[in-house]
Length: 157
Length: 420
Image (cartoon, rainbow over all chains, first blue to last red):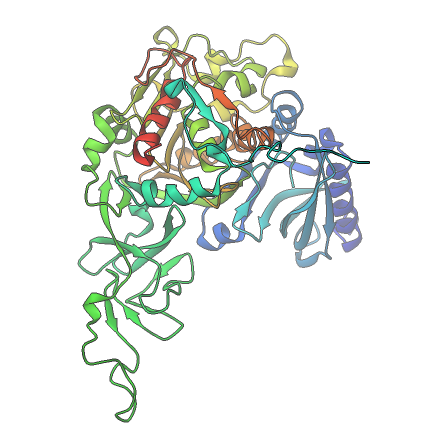
């Protein structure tokens, strides 16, 4: 089937996504998502309890665009960057034009003064959809392992 | 190199524990740094005549439900017993002091300490001691041992509008008196029907707990530090605001209304006045505010001394519990909620508007970090002091938010309890 979802395409999307954030090309970040979409940063405890609220919650591409605009134009925070390290995606379902996977991540945050800390670990729970020639996230739940969150989550995970 | 330092020329580095002159308009920075102050706060303040917020009643809805929480550094269990009453007791076994409940919450008929299996009921009464009568006639507790004389400390409970407070003091005033009429009315306004928890997380703040609690009370900083609304040209000039402070100074509510002239329009329609397309929100559903309390008040931030914040930012509702973790770190426990009768539209509206607050909050992500900026800034300034004179030197509410009255109110209450 032409345009079918393959492991290779999933790997390419995952790699491009973290490169986008870690290289501070955040203006391109919303383009990884379908519209409408669901992007939620939550914790394992909330997911287990069935709580829907997120630390970040966006259900349209417009909300993702607004988040980057706010980071660039409005919000005040110390200069920082992330380094995402991904584990291998475990493909849970692949129907050809829609697929689901689970991918472990580790994010180190590097502050402007050189301090580096493990910022978050967790799982990306993804649903993919083919949109034209591109593969997009129709849903990306970022499930952090810890119930503790750093004082600031400026950049998206 | 020979450095000649005469004896006693190096001043003693110990910080003075005397408050600088200027009464409530000066705050010495040692108050955020001293381990002695942290220890004193536990005794005189958190275990003193105050009401500590413990959890929401909705978090222990059924008999047997419990939550683990804290009063300052004291670990506490809150449980609903089978008489349907809520009880709270220190999470510390009377035997050797181990934690009685090890997880964050759940459901139990009773509690058994893992160390030596001493057993407690949901009120915190010691009910059984393993091998109390010994084994085969040997060992065991002395015949004079009375279980009723041993147990973790118990807290008095006050349930106000579903907010569960606890106190270790017999002298604390009743909760309504403690809050004062004005702050109590502002709580009732929001918590007027059964709530449903929608999320829970802990934000770790790199600063003393007081810097966060002051920030919540500081109406002066809001439009200066937080530029989200102004950047996106969301018109706030027409808003009326106000501030009430409890009689003891420690609790407050600040609030703002959309001006009557604009009340017929929804927030988004009145708000976006930008001709620069780039500075408008792409998705304005974030600003789709429903006037759910029917009074036009779209933002109310309320604090109850010493550790609760109740938040209404549009339709984003949350309680935040402020817990000190030593003098340099604070755990901020967020519980977001809605109401049991929320429509699906309202649920979605709240989920979207939760983006406004928290560690990634558009309006207030700076609040988590700014306490750390102060803590780092004053690292070598224990002998210096902050100046808190905006709006004069009083602690009563004013018809403006360009005042630090509620910050001074906090210190009035704090110093009274601490005796410093």
